Length: 284
Image (cartoon, rainbow, N blue to C red; front, top):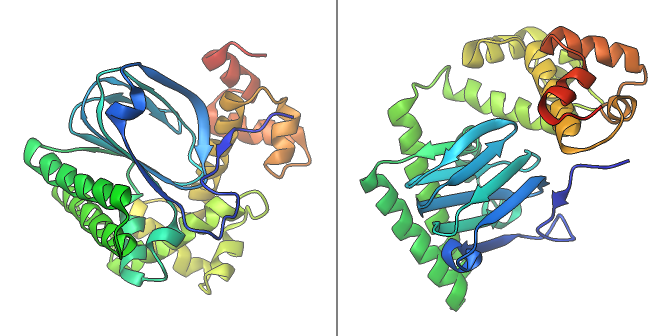
């Protein structure tokens, strides 16, 4: 059985992960192509200039100047950059940044709700100067550099948060947004074993009515609809990023009955898993 490749920042998931690379030096004057894979850490790519292609959970984006990509752990992506790209690539996990700080937790949740940020020239230059400072701290490693990096990272994420505020009106209350993100994080972790909305409501110490009220007020969907969407997304990840048989993918997603999984997939995608894979990859 083939799994989606996972790039791990550290063998011990409890340890902190942090790294920042200069994109121009990383490319070394050559284009770069990465096939579909996941990370077990957050991935931030800020591009000052250059072109390419970036697909995140099968949503395509054109790489362009003054763009920032932010990817959550577990998301599947593939990336192509031309040789002229410049900017920074930053990897970190929650252990290295959040450190049980509630403000940072909520900021990280808000930023990671979007995968792509297109900034104007002024906003990008401001973000780039922060990344320059982070890169210098990481390179020099003077006393207290980790605290300085985290402080600058908070400033960078706050700048991105302001960008969300310009283009998106917040839906629901702050409390509802926090509980929605909590639900989505639980869903990412437990969707294989927990597929009923009531199970998530119990984990969150809410009634099913309360949880549905939160998801309806924030994203206009029921809890069950979000669960089904996530399962379909995970199925698409395996269908397009591996050559596993449909029966094996069904089992990996927690379905003992392959026929039931196929019917579930077809109901939501209007085609069978095999047809979906063939349409995109030409695989049987």
